[in-house]
Amino acid sequence: NKAPTKGAWLQLEQVVAWLVGNTDFNISGPVVKGTVWEVFSDSDHAGDRALSFRSHTGVLIMCNGVPVHWRSKKPPVMSVSSACPEIYALAEAVKDGTLNAWRAQEIGYSRECPLEIQVDNAASIVFQSKMNPNSGLKGMIQLRDGWVQELQDLQLVKTTKVAAEDNPADLLT
Image (cartoon, rainbow, N blue to C red; front, side, top):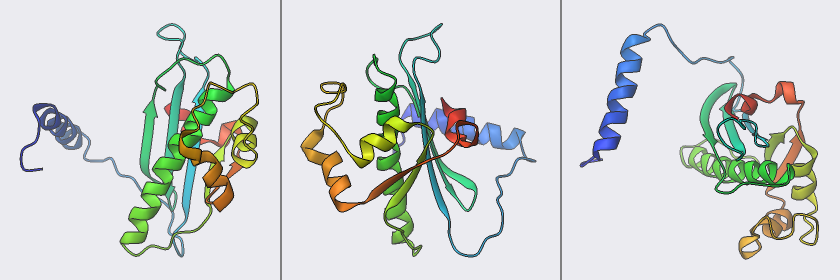
């Protein structure tokens, strides 16, 4: 950026300072043939009640076992159902995973469809495979422009179950 904001400049200084102080740190992964992408999503349901009753969302994308993208944030609203934050986390993982897959494709890496997202809860899997707008979640999740239905119809996303202790996105919640 030709004209970074003051905040962006301060963040850059923090990153450089951290790198200077941690010269022995590296991110590495196993040597594998081809390119293996893994996308994980997780959420806690008001897991930090001492600070807030909002849930926390975590998304982690790994390429050949190395983290290449991560997100840890609170959803915009509180939730009364434990399923809502998980579905919100899945939606964030779909956006991040799709964007990273397109970026990888632009620089020559193959992109597999459907995008597989690993979750540690049944609510996301059921919602992704058979959305029911008349369920108990009606009114809690906005179905903008049929986006979720379109993902189902085109079979662009597939969720798979991973054990909670094997979900690295749990570190971000």
